[in-house]
Length: 297
Ligand SMILES: Nc1ncnc2c1ncn2[C@@H]1O[C@H](COP(=O)(O)OP(=O)(O)OP(=O)(O)O)[C@@H](O)[C@H]1O
Ligand SMILES: O=P(O)(O)OC[C@H]1O[C@H](OP(=O)(O)OP(=O)(O)O)[C@H](O)[C@@H]1O
Ligand SMILES: [Mg+2]
Image (tube, rainbow, N blue to C red):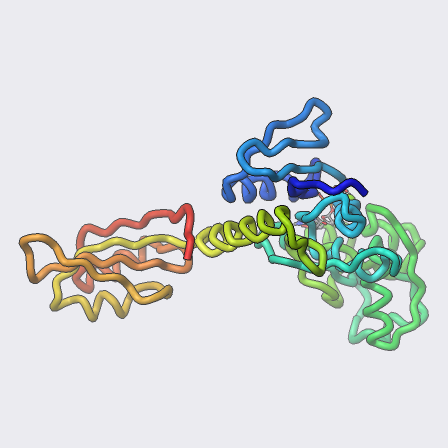
């Protein structure tokens, strides 16, 4: 295969992961010019291009070396790892990305009094995930029939083609609408950055490493807030005690007011009005909560 000097990332062309994946890459400083066929996006600033494909094809494209990285659900990646031929290169989950959260679960008819895996013995289970389901059945020493369906799996019990299903669950709405209930969780999933087990040691490898560092910075601060406030030295301890998590705050002196301090703290998540009001009661003034855009340690 021809060697490439530009990094290529595969992501979903159109679906649940498309928007959040693009937003994440944009936050990492990547911008793209979309080609006319919209399947290949040329990276403008950095030597990183995008390939827009069906999510099921992403692991295979990485394993074949057509793409260096992919943004895909852990469910799709794990299924590929269990079912792909041995001739394909093994893949690894480089980073969890914090969106597209769902779980792969076995669900049974609502009226069934489910009390454990052995109840599935000899039953037929409909799924699009034969690899993950097969592995779970082996682990629990259950012999069950696996009925392959590409979609609309939840309808199978009503049609009489299966006794239970194994599919993705998020809100649980689809299960309820089909008179099913969750019985076993096989996998907790979210979008992940997938890549080869061993990273390339060339220019692409250097770019990949840089991208991972940027990604870590973005992920680390995505939920973070910077809290700025003023306090007197006398109330500093009480105020500090109420700060929501995060590393030690930084203290700055206020010009011309030796008794006053400016405090700066990185908070791990949202800072609520209730928390601000409590901190104010403890003696803080001039409080600001700022979103954090980038972080480079
Ligand atoms: N209900 C859900 N809520 C949240 N995340 C989900 C949900 N269903 C699936 N996902 C996650 O989002 C990924 C993409 O889901 P989507 O429904 O867009 O895929 P698809 O229909 O297989 O798309 P494609 O056309 O690319 O094959 C899934 O593989 C899973 O990781
Ligand atoms: O627990 P819920 O919030 O109801 O989500 C779960 C449903 O979402 C996905 O289907 P999707 O809506 O993508 O339909 P599709 O599989 O037919 O594309 C998944 O296959 C489940 O059917
Ligand atoms: Mg798909």
